[in-house]
Amino acid sequence: MPAETSPAGNLDDDDYPAYTMGRAADILGITPAFLRAVGEAELITPLRSEGGHRRYSKGQLRIAARARELVDQGTPVEAACRIIALEDRLAEALRLNERMRRRPDE
Image 1 (cartoon, helix red, strand yellow):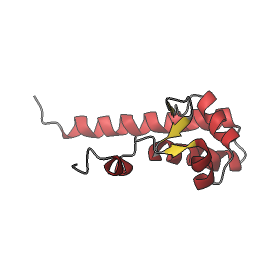
Image 2 (tube, one colour):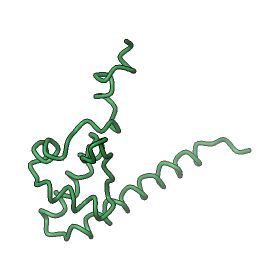
Image 3 (cartoon, rainbow, N blue to C red):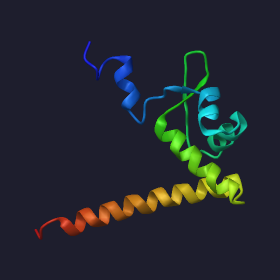
């Protein structure tokens, strides 16, 4: 089976939901309740297993870690989630702007 189609090949994929809630919380040193809170604030949306359990990707763990960082600095969870969403929008706008500037005149 080729690596890209094997389950082990998915572990390099930032979007592959490889982590259970408990494992994700352990990796980040946070509580499952914090993961639920950022989910309720719609910052991340974990995949649900067939049994209904939340599964998180590496990318989602990075986002949750950033939220925890902001909360640890005194930012309320909802505000931290909004800040991260705005940071993501700004980064995307900057990428688009750079791409447009590099486009030759038509």
